[in-house]
Amino acid sequence: MSQTASSHSSDAHTGYRGEALGVLERYDVQVWSDVIVASTRGEFRGIILPRSEFDDSLHLVLKIPSGYNVGIDVRTITGITVLGVKEAHYKIPEKAFPVSPNKPNVKLLGTGGTIASRLDYRTGAVIPAFSPGELYGAVPELADICNLETEKLFGVFSENMGPEQYKELAGAIGEAIKGGIDGIVVGHGTDTMHHTASALAFMVQDSPVPIVLVGSQRSSDRPSSDAALNLIHATTASATSDIAEVMVCMFGPTSDEYGLLHRGTRVRKMHSSYRSTFRTIGDIPLATVTRDGVRPLRQDYNRRRDDRHVGIFPYFEERVSLLYYYPNMHPDIIDGLVDNDYRGIVIAGTGLGHVNKPVYPALERAAKAGVHVYMTVQTLWGYVHMFVYDTGRDLMAKGVVPAENMLPEVAYVKLAWVLGQTSDPDEIRARMLSPICGEITEREPHNGYLVFQGGLPEMEAFLKKVHR
Image 1 (cartoon, rainbow, N blue to C red):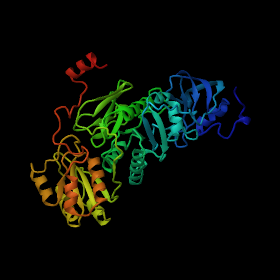
Image 2: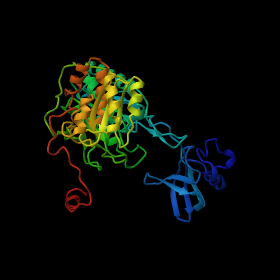
Image 3: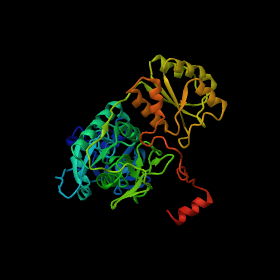
């Protein structure tokens, strides 16, 4: 099924250039060919994938039978045998979703991200492009859980989510709830999912139904993808759970034993690539979830209700900044924010909530200019305690307000949300320091801070005995 070079389409060598392109032309091979590549390092069987125009020119990329990709240095290639040419499918077949009057009704709101993705055949990259219909066409198990409605709101990577999307998403959730939906799933990229979860927790209050954000760490074209199972878990929680809060649903352990439901204001992405990347910080998760259902881990959550009442508060002041303090930070960073009319600053300080003395005057100038400055801790776990050392007391005297145990990102989102509604300093402080949706807790539970450190004898014994 090999084709001659003269009959190749303009896409035959998509993304390849330089030495890699020369190898494809020498052996008369095109992208999407099923090949056996002979090299000085052995033989490799797989499908030739396109490459991004920004990739190097020295590697041929194959998708091998296991589903993973391998890059082969073209300088080691001694021959290529073409077995056939695969047809590039740009679209996953859609299925008509079966409807049953006995099943709960769930609405899937699509925003983009890896949970809704396909391979871009121009660049070889995974891009957000699944339609909702393709999603349930790819995951037929969803039909066993609920009747699914879908609406694609955006098609963006999560780093491009922001106030405009938060507000529109909150409005869409409110409309769906008022329309009688039994649960909501939000497909979202994982990188900023905890920011969006926090924003929705403040913007959508007293919901009568579960609101579950879900994504995946590994794209659908990989054998180790968590996309389908995460979506099954999130839909199960949305359709059947009694927990009517804004939650994030992702893998619990890195295996596929169960998912975790995390409260939207106490969750954070903690690993760049692990499937078990999301962790509840300073507390314990709300529940575990499997294909069989949801098992709560605590009882202090808002319960599902039969009414359609929900509070939608889509406010966000964009002139708010989150600063991560580092030694030798200069005051001009803070002065620059003040000069550009920023209304709020959240600092992730060291230890109990500290910064260096050179920035004191800038913080004092900010406070006098009416900028609201709040302190969090970059340790993530624990509370701000600014009464303990002179540093903290000096900072409070200059107008910096300790933000209890709010996570830095959550304090940033909450301050922007509060400033979007009022300019009164006393009201701003009162609302910032009053817990609304679990963003401030009275205390950390004894098991709210557990870091299992590998290498320790007792930990290694536990892993070998209990959890391989």
